[in-house]
Image 1 (cartoon, rainbow, N blue to C red):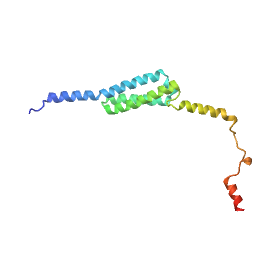
Image 2: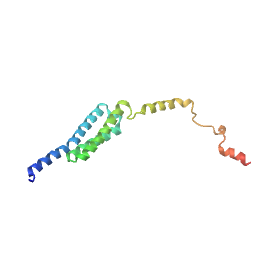
Image 3: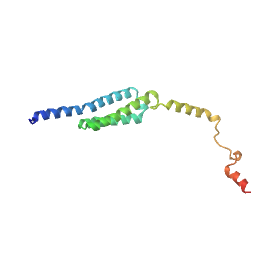
Image 4: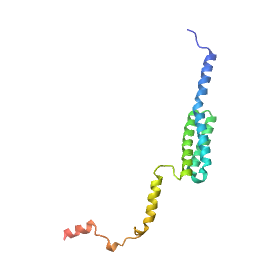
Length: 139
C-alpha cells in the first residue's frame, strides 16, 4: 500500500472546507431575501421588535461567517430569517399567528358589550354566598 501524498490530503481538506461554507452561505442568502421582503413591507414601523431582532441576527450572522464560524453563522441566519419573515407577516397582515383574526373579533365583541356588562356591581343586591347559607344551618 502506498501512503497518500500531502497534496492529496490538502486537496481533500480544501474541498471539504469549501463545502462547509455552502449551507451557511445559502442560509445567509435566504436571510437577505427575507430581510428585503420585510423592508418592502415596512416592517421597521409595523413590527419594530421582530424587525430589530432580524437585523441584529443578520449582522451577527454575517460577522460570524466572516470569522469562518460557519455553524454559528448558519444558526444565527436561521433565527434572523424567522424573525424577518415574522416581521414581514405582521407588517402585511397585522399579526404573525393564525388565531389573530379570531382574537380581534372577540375583542370587538367585548368592546360592543359595554352596554351589557356593568361597570360596577351593586353589592346590596348581590345573591347570598355559600357562607350566608351555612349561617342559616347553624341557627
